Length: 380
Image 1: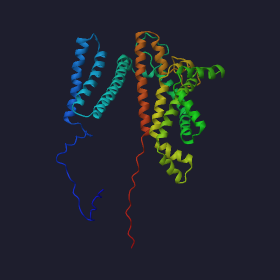
Image 2: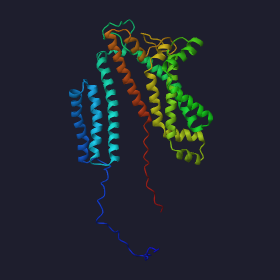
Image 3: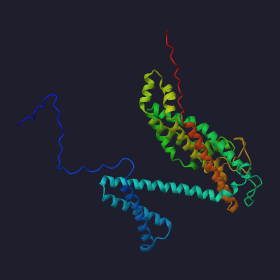
Image 4: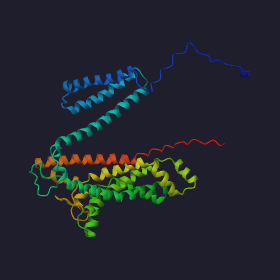
């Protein structure tokens, strides 16, 4: 058994190359794809387009745009996999197929969203051209009256009031519940998390029946905007608590440990470190809660009732809202009323978008103040 030669200290050893070794495999590009990759990518879908037309229009009786798009998507994935297997390894083939599937799913979701928005706006644009649609209520206006009479001011104000009251209830309870589940923990926190997760799938009609039974039937309160706000709060609370719990879990433990190491208490660390760090995520949780509550119809139908006139006080009796206005207007069956309902749905979408923008502005991190350096005076 021979031992390896001992190299003297200070000697330089040059690397040896094997001239007969095969060339190294090219590594996949991590940045912009090359021209060959782009040609394979787009050529696969172009050829799949022709194959989809041949299959749906000549070989199989599959008329309609939907079948054509489905066949095109399936054949595009197949052709992408075949062409990629001719030039790259199987790992890259799987990667390209997965990227094609994910991109196709995103395009389907985007197309469904855009088509829904366009359909609603095209069906309800005519009432939006009249200023009275935003400033008047429906007192004394029938379903067959022209668009220059009546409006949705009472429903929009009712939705804002009900969502505002629900947010006042949900924000401290939802975020406080998330803080308890994340920062305190324990067996009771596990029970609370289980209840919150179960309430996330609570049907809206059950929340409306709960508030109707406890508040209106048992307590004797009349149907009002306050009762509708309580029903919306029951729907929004588990959404906000669950989303805020997930956001607070993402905050690094190092920030908590740093705050505790500096001598701060646990609650002071949560207030000054954890919550400011998670503020954008908490704003997203609030957005999800508002999006869930602002479009609910059955809870407000059971607890508030529909009014054709303006009601501002949350305890002054029945109060209308935009989802309830859309529901009652569509039920009339008149073409004029259905067009008004689509116009109200357009306003509801614009209201949700406005709330989203406001929440994002609130969640924007504050800019760090610039510290101006003062010149140091030289001591004489």
